[in-house]
Image (cartoon, rainbow, N blue to C red; front, side, top):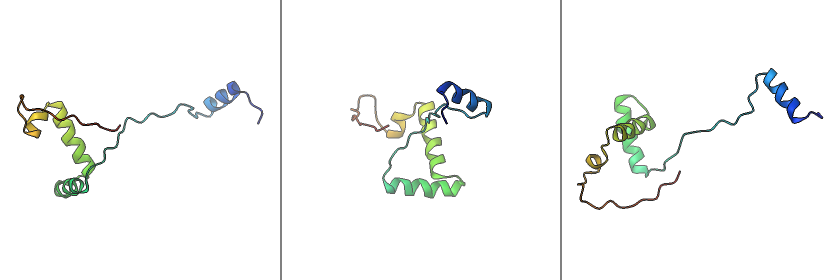
Length: 86
């Protein structure tokens, strides 16, 4: 078309076309099939998706700092280091 970058920006702006990239804050976590199956089974009984259930559980754990309670660990117990993928 022979347009300069500036001309392209102006034209896109006039047409209300955003040139900004959308940044996703979503992260995907791989879970063993047996866990996914259990989440799906319970989620179905309360009428939500397994992913919604997982999100609600993780939100409650982090909001209320329930890590040790959920994992049934004492303060003195060693916590194994895990590597998590983004």
